Length: 120
Image (tube, rainbow, N blue to C red; front, side, top):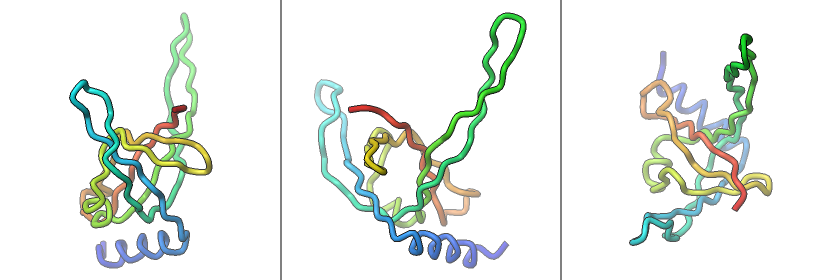
């Protein structure tokens, strides 16, 4: 696989979307409460994946799907942004919290951030 080609392909997709997200950064305060640190902008591509969970009720197991919101960004942009878990971002008027990320194919060219919607 040509990594330079793949990185360029993701970069072009992010540029084509022309969406820059504003993340609110927090740190853990003296009393373990979140304290505002600042804000950072990050160009990224919003997408939704479908996750599946199994729910067991009595004798039957039922499969359910759940949409999982994610942001795809370049590894270098993410690395310099300072974004961590529990930082927040506003997408389409809804507030999301970063709850993890994946280094796509462990190649250091793209990060796929998992988001969790919350009210707050």
